[in-house]
Amino acid sequence: MGRRPERGSTVGNGKGIAGAAVATDPARSKGATQSRAATEQALEQAALELLEQEGVLAGLNLREVAERASVNRGLVYHYFGSRQRLLRAALGRRSEAFQEDIDEIWVLPFHERGEMYLTMALKHQSAITLKTILMLDRDERVRMLPLWPRSQETHLRDIAVGNLPPDTDIEAMQAALVSLVTGYILQREAFAAELGLDLDELDSKVAAMFSRVLDGMAGRPKDADPSP
Image 1 (cartoon, rainbow, N blue to C red):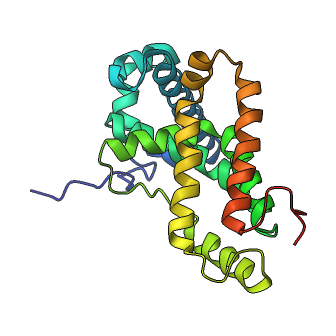
Image 2: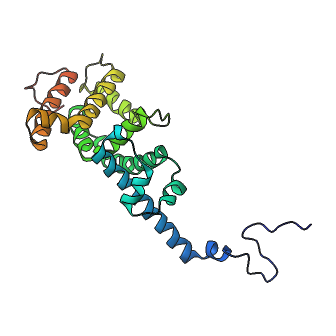
Image 3: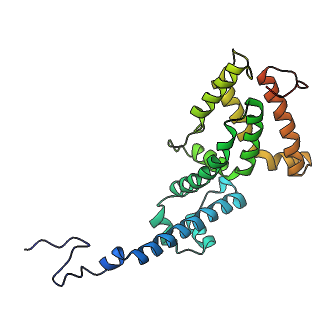
C-alpha cells in the first residue's frame, strides 16, 4: 500500500489536497488570523464581564462566556480548552498593557514611584483581579511579583542616593507594598459601599494614606519635603 500524502503536499495535478490552498493563501490566512484574534478578545472580555457580574465564587461557565460573546461554544474549547487557559490569556493581554504603562515609573524616586504604582493599578484593575483568581486556582505559572528584578534595582538605587534608609529590607517592603495595593484593588467597591463613600472619594483618601505609608518606609516625617 502506498504512503498517504501528508496534509499540504501536492498530489498528481500539483494543486495540493483540498484545503491546502486556504492555508497557503496569504490574504485568506491573514483574514483568518484577524478573525481568530477578534474572537479570542471577545471571549476574554465576556469572561471578565461575567466575573464582575456574577462574582468569582459563582464559577465561570464557558457556555455562558460563549453566549455573552455571541460566539459558537465550540470555539471557546477550540481556542482555549479550559477556564484557566481563557483567564490566563486574558491576564496576558492585560498585563502587557499594564507593563507598558508602568515602564515610565522606573526613573522616578521611591515616593513618587510608589504613588504612580497605585495610580497604574487602579487603571488596570482587571489584570490584578485575574492574577489573583489564577493564583487561588493554583496556577503555578502566575507570578505575583513579575516586576521584582526592576523593582529591586530601583530600590537599591534609592538606598544609594538616600531616598530609602540603608537598612531597608527591600524584599519585605516590596511584598508589603504589592499586598497593600492588591488588597485595596480587590476590595475597594466593598469598602466604598460599607463606608458610604463613592469610589473616587475613597480612592483619593486611600492615595493620601498610601503616601503617608511611603513616607514612613522612606524614614521621613509626613510633612517633610518630598524631593530627594
